[in-house]
Length: 106
Image (tube, rainbow, N blue to C red; front, top):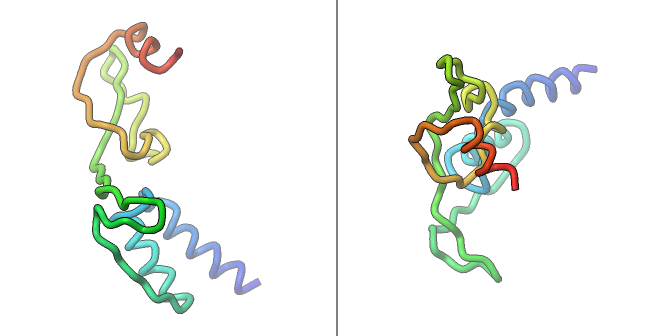
C-alpha cells in the first residue's frame, strides 16, 4: 500500500507538467523520475539525424486560450494542457463561432 501511495504522489507531481516529444517538460519529468529510479540521460541537438528521424526544434508554450463573446475563457491551457495541440502555431485573432467551426470542422 505504501508503494501505491508513492506512485500516486509521483503522478500528482508529474501530471501537470506540459510535455511534448522533447523540451523542458520532458527534462523536468525525467529529473523527477531520476529521484525514484536510476536513469542515464542523453541529449541530442536539434537538427541531428537519429535513424530515420531528424530531431525537430523544441516547442514551447506559455499560455493559450479561447474566449467567448462575453470575454469568458472557454478553452484554457492553464486548466488543461490538452486544450492545445502540440507544435501548433500561435494565433492572435478574433473569429466568429462560425469562422472557428470552419477551421476545425471539415
